[in-house]
Amino acid sequence: MSNLMKKKSSINGIGVFTDRFIQKDSVFYEVPMGIVHTAPRPKWAHIGENRWVCDEKVLNYINHSCSSNTVLDISGIPKLIAKRNIYPGEEITVNYNETEAHQCKINCTCASLNCNGFFFIQHASSMLFLGDSYTEGTGVRYDKTYPYLLSKKLGTVSMDVLAKHGWSSTDLINNLREIEHKNYDYTYLLIGVNDFCDSIPNQDILKNMGLLYESIKRLSKQIVILTIPDFTRAPNAIKYGDLELNQTNLTDLNVRITSTFSQKCAIIDIFSVTKTLTQNDFYTKDGIHPSEKQYELWVDRILEEV
Ligand SMILES: [Zn+2]
Image (cartoon, rainbow, N blue to C red):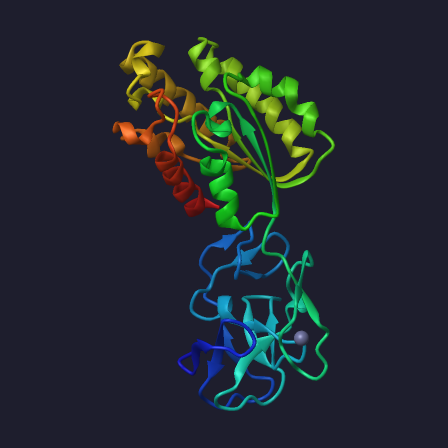
């Protein structure tokens, strides 16, 4: 691997180059397999259905060429195989059309004689965000809410938000028809705090979340559930009742959400992110809803998991 290095490419940005001779048909790089991600991001390589790998050392930087010198073999552990002899100083290139999901058409700049003029890449997905004021972003500019911040980081192609201040899980169920004929790669669900504040029993909240899960499954390839933030840390949380009692009950609800759904879909633990957030600047002016600064922490946590 020491024969590969990154440097400025005439094709696009930074590319990967070899400083040694690579024999035709030889395997010259095996991709280190850490976490296999189920959502694409810019630069990550597609290595099979709903599977992407992040390899900052080499793979993320390999450019496309219509007359590539290398194949990315994804039949087992992804590896690079030379299609022809490659000489010192040459840029390593692969044909993205052979492995990438065919979603976005990109103009090709490979400059080879048989350039197709374009190639395909999937660097983005469609996302749906379901919830209440936490998802709508009460008191925060639209482009500073967690759905927007996350979509931007993930290079999302399209996003829909179905969320309103004050919505309970029942309100959300009653409004699902708005999106029932649509399809999404990912759906993020964060609901239950209004049920909780209305003293709806935990088992009823979980039952509604189960109904939501079944409905979402029909229109979304993957589902991500966020646990309910610890609103008892907010400056004005006392308005909603005894802080300690609320925190205990909310902990219980989040534990049950996690145990009910963790075998079925990804769970992001927003509760633990927010448990220590007492400073005013983590909240909007109303002293209860998350500020942009808090949403950034949420997005960091989500990106650790997805
Ligand atoms: Zn080309």
